[in-house]
Amino acid sequence: MMTNDSKNDPVVAPVAAAVQPDTDVQPVEPTRAPSGDGAGMSPNFLREIRIENMMSKAELARKAGLSVLTITRIENGFGCRMDTKRKILKALGLKVSDRRKVFKDD
Image 1 (spheres, rainbow, N blue to C red):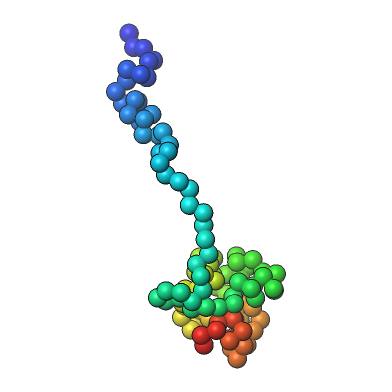
Image 2 (cartoon, one colour):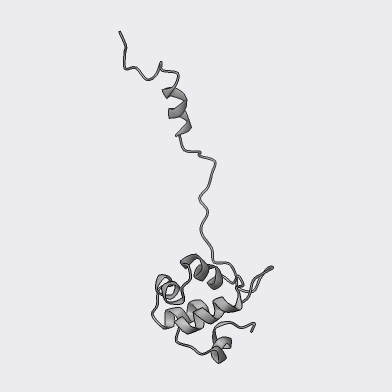
C-alpha cells in the first residue's frame, strides 16, 4: 500500500527545500546608466526627444525598424552604428542635418 506522505518521499523533499527563497539576497533597484560615462558610452537626447514627441519606445522602434532593446540601450548612452542613428532620425521626423539635436557626439 502506498501513502501520500511527501515528507518521507526522497524526491519531493529536496525539491521543496530548493524552492525556499534566499533571505540573504537583497533586491536591486534598476538605475539608468549615466550618459557619457565608460567605454562605448555616448551622451544623447534620444529619450527626451522621444518623450517630447509623445512616442513610446515600442512605437519608435517599430517606425525605425529596430528592437525596443536597441532603443533602450541607445537611450542609456551606449553607442550605435550610423545606419541606426539615421533610422532613428527618420522615425522621429528629423533630417540627418538635425543629428546633433539627438546625438551630441556627431
